[in-house]
Image (tube, rainbow, N blue to C red):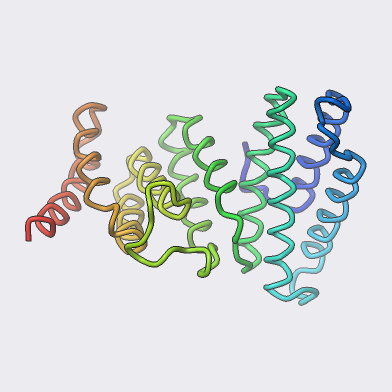
Length: 241
């Protein structure tokens, strides 16, 4: 997946292909009354606006709030198509839609808009991260996770210290730390860990404790162990006090 190409034309292609696959595979029973013509029309309308924005860069055709709302509608459409693809067992379309959700999130971040529908984005990011073990790809991917974190709408974030175990915001920050660790890049790890302790300090102690356990279990390189050990020691000390 070439997520860097998160342009509107690519997003449109993913959406239209998914709608076409669902129309071909679906029936009145399996689609449960969903009007696929409306889905197709909505996909084209939304992505045509995205393309218009891309084609007129530098011109303020829409406000940041309007682009953010456009993002809400687009991610919601992706999410609806994901449900239908799963219902119809369209594995390839399902995977492509996950990629499309990430592309949409990156597009919003690149246009200084905010991400408010966070859960579908977090789920898609986690699935992609789990699909590769290549440190070079994970190094690149960690930058995408960082950009998504920075683009999350402040009103979507729980108060510091108030996240529960299932909070998408908490999971997103933890996954940033995991992806950074698996990249084997000390600088990226330091950046991700600093972000994690700032955004979800209530999760830090367990994260670094479990991280140290993984160092031996998965035979991480020494420079990775050193970064994890630094943060583990700091948070272990804080807990003792």
